[in-house]
Image (tube, rainbow, N blue to C red; front, side, top):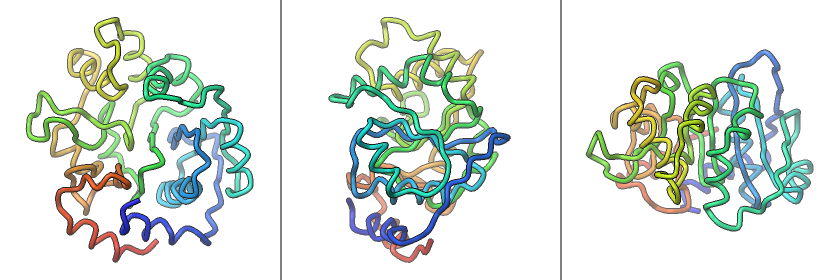
Length: 237
């Protein structure tokens, strides 16, 4: 964990963040995790704290679900998965499976991972595309960059359509590469953000600290502009 990111998340160590389930909400947070990490409840509390009105889904293995039952307060959707994600291929298979998205009731979905932190709640601006996330890959090429899925917005309807369009030509690709390439190919079905709009949504290597909802890759030191870490040290939750 990068020091500034860890410092920011540690503010949640003793912070009480009750999780509220609103069955009338059309927005949710989704995390898939198989590791009962020290950081996991802090990452989840940060996400819930910064995203009021969003329901929470935890897709976890039995050991993770038991761990979180003792560390989180409130009501959320707790869905047990039977795989321990021994490799990235199993994660990709899960997210490209129509049945996975069908389990989620809400239309507006924020997917986040263990290596993320939230700075602010998503707005309508952040959620006006079918898939939005940090820029990765070719950082300056509008038609070639990949939308990172680690901290991302997904439209449920779009994900279901996309899963039906996946064919053998996408075999072996990470799920976010698949969805970026597929949605870019089928412009009649999907609307994707530009590099600038992705930078305003999330930070990984590049991004706009003043508008992004959060940072992905908190343990990987990807960020080019190191002043972002300095600004993060000043942030209070």
